[in-house]
Amino acid sequence: QVQLAESGGGLVQAGGSLRLSCAASGLTFSNICMGWFRQAPGKEREFVAAVSYNGGSTFYTDSVKGRFTISRDNAKKMVYLRMTSLKPEDTAVYYCAKSQYPLTSNSRTATAYDYWGQGTQVTVSS
Image (cartoon, rainbow, N blue to C red; front, top):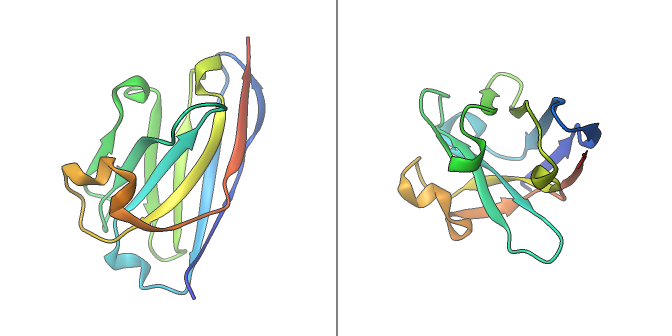
């Protein structure tokens, strides 16, 4: 049974940093593209970042480029999202997700992912 569990969210002031973690189990983690999405109140879930099976390639949505870094540790079955220079508009529930496909341009769409974590709340105060 595939399980994804996020942690690391919280309340931070604008300009601050957080690192989100996602622990995966029940899957062959090292073969799989992983992604992070977020959903703010009243808005649709949006793509944040994705990483290829070996960490060699990454995608980011434009609004987080240069501020967020996605990474993974295949030995630990973990994927991370390092967030710096946080802004109030980054406030959302952040979700870790397992992709059905290798990293491609489709990795920016939620339909490419078949398993999701429960989410972790990130709140950035101004």
